[in-house]
Image (cartoon, rainbow, N blue to C red; front, side, top):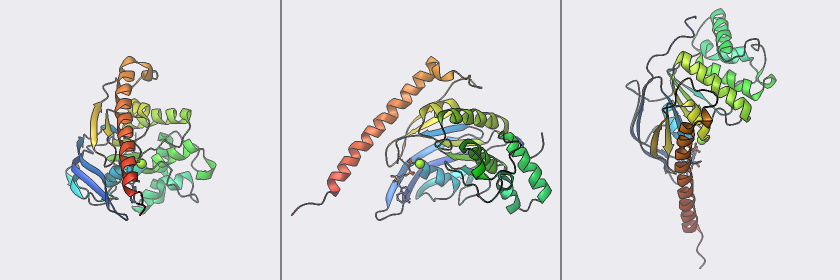
Length: 279
Ligand SMILES: Nc1ncnc2c1ncn2[C@@H]1O[C@H](COP(=O)(O)OP(=O)(O)O)[C@@H](O)[C@H]1O
Ligand SMILES: [Mg+2]
C-alpha cells in the first residue's frame, strides 16, 4: 500500500459544554450544553428530530461556525476555523461539474501544491478505494448519484483528514445504493481509521455503522442519551434482524419519537404565543 492510503492516527474530538447560537431576526440557541468526547478512530452517529441542530453541531466541528459557549478541541487544539485535519462530506456532493472525477478528487492536492503526476497517481488510488477505477475521466453529470457520492468521499479522504464529518451523506440515495455505500464506508473506515462523526435520520444506518449513537433532544439540541452499539465487527449482513440490533433500534426509536413529540408540543406553544392578538 502506498503512503497516500495510510493508517490514521488520533482525531480525538472534545466537546465541552458547547452552545451555538445562530443569527437571524431573533438570535436563537440551536444547540446547548453539548459535552462528549469522541475517541480517535471512533465511529459516532448523531440522530435526533429534524431541526434539533445536528448540522449546526457538525458545522461547528468543521470550523464553519463558532460556538457561543464552551470548548471544542481536536487532538487538544482549539478549533478556530476549517482545517485540513477535518473533512466534510455533504449530502449533496460539492463536486465541480466542469471537472472530471479525477480532477475533482485531485483538486485539494493541487491547492496544496502537489505536482501533477503525483496528484494523478494519488487521485487514481482514491478513486480505486471507493470502487471507481476506470471512471476517472467522467464528469459528475455522467455518474449516478451513488458514484457522485463516492467521488465526494474520495475528494475528502485524499487530504488525509483525521476527522471525517458526514452530514446525511447517503440521504438522497435509494435504499439499495445506500446499503452498498454503508458497506463501502465501513470498509474504508476499517482501513484508514479516521474518526467519523456521522449525521443521519436513519436509525438503522446509525446502528449498522457506529460504535456509539448520540441521541439529541429537540431544539435547542442537547445530548439526551449516548447509546453504545456493542455489536460485533465486521457486522454481518443480516445484523439488522438480530435481537441485539432490534433492541437497540427500539431504544433509539422510542427516544427520537419522544423528542419529536415534545418538539411538536413546543412548536404549538410558540405558534400560540406568536399569533396576532385581535383587538
Ligand atoms: N442560518 C440560520 N439562521 C437561523 N436559523 C437557522 C439557520 N440554519 C438553521 N437554522 C435553524 O436552526 C435549527 C437547527 O438547524 P440544523 O442544525 O440544520 O438542524 P438539523 O440538521 O438537526 O435538522 C433549525 O431549527 C433551523 O431551522
Ligand atoms: Mg441537518
